[in-house]
Image (cartoon, rainbow, N blue to C red; front, side):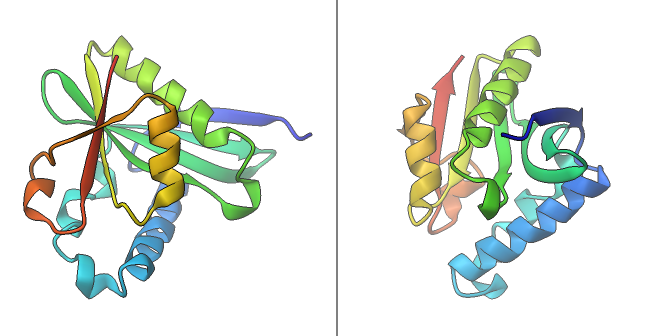
Length: 153
């Protein structure tokens, strides 16, 4: 099996920017077009994501996950993505653990995230990793289709 390596960067990284565009297309297709998720877009600007981990096999980027400051106690997990051909190898699990550890290092006491119920694989992953459903936090408390989760660190 090919060795997976992980590289730390931030939301302005060009590789992460490509993943960001790919995830934007995916999320839009999930809800029937960008118009149906206009309310979400301003809260997902990639450059606002301060910490990013990117997974590679060789020189090929195959996945990413980000961490964004939300409050003094909470760090928000953003843009967890693994390319379809590389799924089912526990790459997302590894990136989530790395992101959670980074949040602990930065003295956050909880990680939070927003997803959609239609993203059943993501919801299943988060729940297996110990995330629990919480009331939607701002700005997602005003956006239809959002579901929010948290994990105490």
